[in-house]
Image (cartoon, rainbow, N blue to C red; front, top):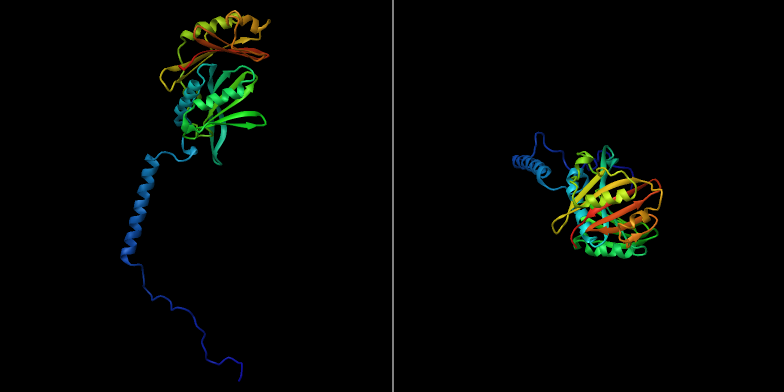
Length: 287
């Protein structure tokens, strides 16, 4: 038998080509067009009405009320301590996307804590926060850290900033910056805390003027926490000794960096720096 291929044999070529002029059925064309129109309509409606699902879709202005509410919760959880609300900070220049710049809004609550009780105070704060924030404390090489989720992509953190000093922070992460920093949180008119602040500044030898900063936040149970802040130059004599008469000789905290006391229902938190002294007078949330 010869192994040569038989002449005239045509190998298989697969299915025949479609007949000229064939096209999609009319019903399939109509259904495809209707689906495309429906999809476009749903996309437009979602973009205009649905809440954002990722942080980058929420602007700095949209996040500011959540930040203020979180500060109020922290102030309520810190009731019974000497604390102060710090003015908000806006960090410009972060990247929302590789092609768009944004900004980060941060706000803080500063607490005076007896030395050695920083971790216990963080634990008390965590226990006092809303349960859906899932607040917890973890130990790190830098000390205990509080972390919580305030919702709407706003985070809460806490740490011991120094001996006798705890800092609680609320942060938005990078957002589109659609507002000026000055308009993010409201200022306040001085009231009962003004006199306490003026007495402390006078004791430190500072010229009593209007406070340079005023911050407030609504308390979750009603009312408002308010802080006035003023700055005095570095004192020639011990600021602790200068403030002791105002504290009645029994300050809540007295370290090289923090001096805290209460006077007539006002909490005074004094931060001692080498070149200046920052005094905060606070009327806080009810315990």
